[in-house]
Image (cartoon, rainbow, N blue to C red; front, side):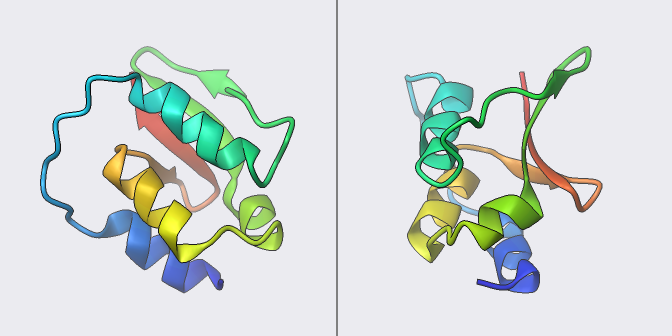
Length: 86
């Protein structure tokens, strides 16, 4: 998958789905399928930063998993990494 396709999937407006589980944790589980040592790389006041977008693309993330990250509320921050509001 190319960056532009991944970005479009992550930026899609998806219908709100109430998810009771921890969306940050579930997103990390998806990312770890491709990057086994992926975790939270940094955190700010109300945001956590994780996987480098280029690395997860190089690792072969599928369209379905990109859609799952979108559904869980993950987004691309500064064109570089995946992030989620805490």
